[in-house]
Length: 102
Image (cartoon, rainbow, N blue to C red):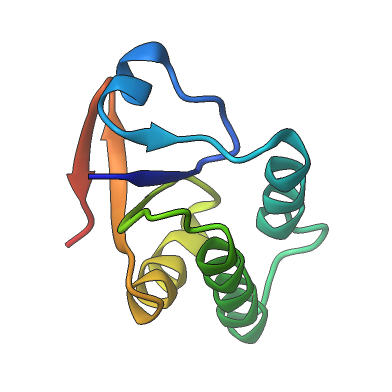
């Protein structure tokens, strides 16, 4: 399984061995900007931002069928829904192990 790293953090060697693929530094910077909020986001802003991140992930898929996510708790729910709409299985990490979002 190929997993796109949408955490904003570099993959560990164990995670890379398990199939996690990092974004380029420039793309990772773009992702981090999409995941940041200057003010508390409204539900509409969260949905829009989740869609933007899912579109960004789809443009940078490179064969991945899953996406490892980490971000503000208020964004995680909308992001899992948006990623599924773009054909990704959202995943969470615990150490070097990956678990699908329910």
